[in-house]
Length: 348
Image (tube, rainbow, N blue to C red; front, side, top):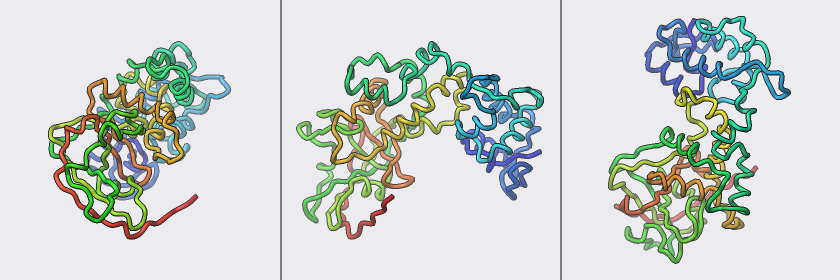
């Protein structure tokens, strides 16, 4: 039996299938002429990955317990298939380790550690709280020495979502200009101290260089009006830099956390909420206090020796933004001033 790359969303599993270099028809989702993988392959890293995940579950009578095929479909971005295909696929993949008659495949299951308050307190990045509870605590109770943030637990995940950029890598920054003359390269850096207002990443008064992945994303991010002049600066990194990809923290393959899947599961929802919160565009009506939780996260990442954070752009699909803690790590090498001639609005 052969599964295929289209059976899965998970990056680790898709990469494993594609690297084998075999093309054919899938026996599970019935895609044709795609990268396929014989599940009888020995050794089988896909089997090892799926077995490691299945084994964190145990049969449970709790009211929120669900069948394995359902929880794998709903709670993990692993499969690109319905529950019926997932059921057949996991039984076949696990067959050499877990009997197909095991009640873990037929009864309702749960991860017991996620019901253990001591486990959640020790390994949860917000000690088992919801993100909203953590945010309220930072905003209204104790923002400088928070007892609801588990520094050791959060730090343990950072190296996995670290993203390196080599010296000379190009990023973009935009500023709305007063006229068609625009700004010079020397004027495209972070604002001076007296003009450093609070943002999602930086507290008021602390400089951060906000950049984007490409010229189109940066024009969307600056949110210029029609007929505004905008100067776009191209920046190059002066040395290798390493940033933490906060948008990728919830989408990282769980199989990179082998041996610690329960810890990842305990934090997955919080990671998703961090990714959403960090990417929210600033609104004119926002109070600076609303940025405190993400500022807290960013300041901690800075304290761990990383050069910045990366997060998805919500204004340009596929684009991303990077906030660099020290602007001296990059140089503006060219500028180009353009006029915005058309804006297209979409509503929902």
